[in-house]
Figure 1: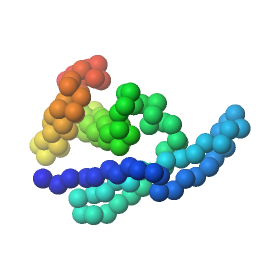
Figure 2: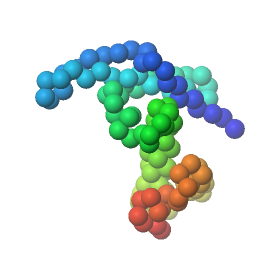
Figure 3: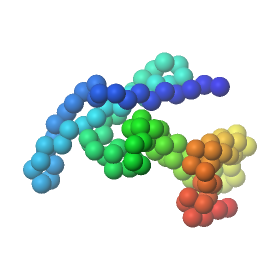
Length: 117
């Protein structure tokens, strides 16, 4: 099994940008590491992860929750809302993504999205 690691600590880079109301907004940098060791970074507005967190929840867990959710939804769209018949390998990937979603969140992807096929 391959693993992708998302790391979080003090932001590797702290950027400042002006918000529409004139306030300075910092960003936090999260790093994603692929199974082959390649990495990529994403900057998010400081405080955004906290808006999505449950009380006391680790920020990196919030980010990985969003990753699981996004990939499961995208796999669902590809498998069930594309034209033509879904190839078996795509169906298998979507089924695994839905399984991982349910393991993580305790409800099926269909329940979370409010529809099923």
